[in-house]
Structures are given as structure tokens and as C-alpha cells.
Image 1: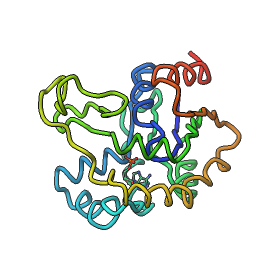
Image 2: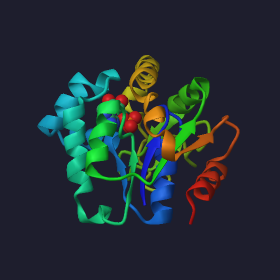
Image 3: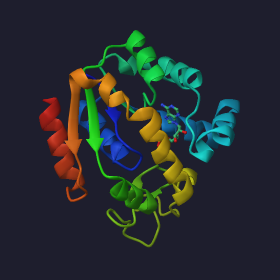
Image 4: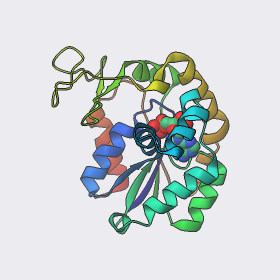
Amino acid sequence: MNIIFLGKPGAGKGTQAKKIADYYRIPHISTGEMFRTAYQEKTPLGVEAHDNYWGAGKLVPDDTTVKLVKERLAKDDCRNGFILDGFPRTVQQAEDLDKIVSIDHTLYIDAPDKICIKRIAGRRNCPTCHKDYNIHFNPPKNDMQCDVCAVALVQRKDDTETIVRQRLLVYEQQTAPLVRHYVKNIVRIVDNGKKTIDALFAEIITALGK
Ligand code: AMP
């Protein structure tokens, strides 16, 4: 099953994509995580993408991002499907993806800006095992430490309020038009901020099928 996932920053794509990947036993491919890992490893691509683009809330250029995704999708573990989280983000990326693979489902979580901003402000991550937390909705057991590794949790560099507003603007201008591109096979899930992570997940699985 080949799935792509649309939704604003903070809509909960990462959290749901990990659960979907576990459920269907397909790889979870997050371009944002690929860029963050490349930056941590200080590869030339990682440093360039951070310094000029994602560190400022801007999109990394299409050709760089498409090349990265194309290489990832060519790996053996994608043969039975994948879930792409955060890609495509522009019409150009969607058109390029159409030339590489066919997509079975386009998931779209529709959530209001206010909820996305609150979620992002509370988002924390373990730098060692990469487990996600949210200080409002899914806090760690011990004050700001990972439940598994006991190391201090960190906030993403692009999760500060100014950069989040820039990312939401970029989403409206460049990514929201993709809803029209995928209109034929889109599954729209509305998140009014009152549903639990598990309730949303159940809704997604029902829509996608077993
Ligand atoms: P995310 O973790 O999906 O929120 O992505 C974090 C940042 O990585 C984004 O704000 C972009 O700067 C960059 N990024 C991730 N995916 C893409 C993409 N498909 N195209 C361009 N830039 C991307």
C-alpha cells in the first residue's frame, strides 16, 4: 500500500504516520526527519538544507528533495508499500512523484491553525531514541526526560513561534493546493482537537481498510 500524508505542520502527521507504518508493516518515510538526521550528521546536504531552508521555515528546493525521496523509494523495504510523511509538499514534487510510483491513498488531516500551533509549542523529542512527547497532551513521566532513555528532551529548532508561523504560511501557499492534485483518491480526516490519538488512528484505519 503506497500512502502519502498531507496536513499542516502540527496536524499530527508524524504521530499517525508512525502508527500506520507499524500497523501495515511498511516503512515510514519522513523527509523532515531525513533532513534533520543529515544535519545532525553534518553532511554537506544536511548543513545546506538547514542553514538555507528548514532552519528558517522555508522549503528545501524540489530537485534536492525529490532526489532524496527517489533514492529512498528505490530501497528494498519499499517494495510492499510505504507511507510518505511531509512529501510531496509542492505541485512540482507531486508531479515528479507521479512519474516514480503510483499512490493508492492520500491521507489528509484537516486541523485548524490554533490547534496546530498549540501542539507544536508543546512538542518535544528524545535526542537518543527519537520518541515523541507533547508537554500538553502526552507528557513524559519524569520532568522533561525521556521515559525510555532518561535523557533530557529537546525541542525542534524550527518549532519556535516565529518559524511555525512562517511554516504555516508556506503550507497555505505551496502545499494546500495539493489537495486538488490528489482529489480522486483523498481520504479527509477532520481533527477538531478533541479526538484522541487512538480515536483518530481508528478513523484512519477504517478509511484505508485492513
Ligand atoms: P517536517 O518534519 O515534515 O515538518 O519538515 C521539516 C522541514 O524540512 C520543513 O519545514 C522543510 O523545510 C523541510 N522539508 C521536509 N519535507 C520537505 C519537502 N517535501 N519539500 C521541501 N522541504 C521539506
